[in-house]
Image (cartoon, rainbow, N blue to C red; front, side, top):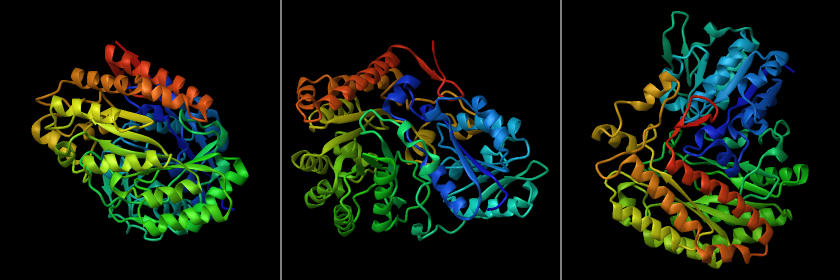
Length: 493
């Protein structure tokens, strides 16, 4: 065992669930960090002692974890950040600076692939990892093990770092790793599996990712790591499923792949392998409507498929084309019809407002969502996230001031702008979002269908939890909700 101790800390993901309150966000779910627990497994495999603190599932703030950080006395602390969670990650890093001043603070995640240099304007971070993190982070750990300080970490590919003079350097990226089978399964022993929860999932549950990359270019999506798809072998995927069922009693697995249903032969192989091993664990997946095939759905159901989540986003082909979604309304109807006829629960994701969308387009989307026979639906107001076509258009048309997200990174947060256009005000967008939820979830046919299912009691509990979320959405429409810098600390004025 090596002497360099590594500590991973996860932030409160409630900070990402705008405009919901922390209470409503936690009803929707608290999930383990696959990024951090995966890295922990990787460096532990190479002999480094590791620990992981999940602030969200423990429902504590950074200062509450300070004594544990001091006691562990890590040489390296690793954090990950999405864009909306950036303020919360800063809070953690500032706490670490106080509790373990000699530790090297490393930050990675999607936000670093866009604003690594700006992120390091905060001196609570020493180095940023850009892109796939395994090889780069292991390089950092091995150098620290050999006695390197921050100044000796300034030539590592795939990083951005701050020099002694305060200058921030960004080094060339590493080649994208082609073989993701070399990486071990998530370090589940570091995670309190039974403490995680989600409104619509069987407990205990776990999460997995079996692919990396996405070949599509939807205009609103900030998937920036790689266009090239890389697959984890079916055998390794099912090994992990078996481990989760046998060791932790996991009843459901959430596959968070961008699109799970790629490759008909792979899907058939997966379904056969799960059945061959006699696994009972259920699972749910994310898919594109143009990858849904009746034969595949039927085989996956035999293996334990419980629900499919698919992005619909719009109700008209015109808006779908503007979004570069590369699907049609007809394909959407066909995909959900197949799932419904095969007895699979469905959830659709919809977007309220987009550039060049009209009021009629939004009304069509609301009607379309209610007519698809879905079990669940999620509606979000379009947000121009960084590194997206939507953000570029918003900048060009003046819907946002300059490079908002760059300044947000430097400032450590700020009020997230709604995508107000010539057609929609922020208030109108919020009102449409509320209308969409009310129209969908208050339909008598939906309530009757849910209560008639064999899992009637669980469906009832889900609906009661959903009512809490729905009430928060309505309240957010009535009150102006302002996200503050920090871990989901919401104020209303």
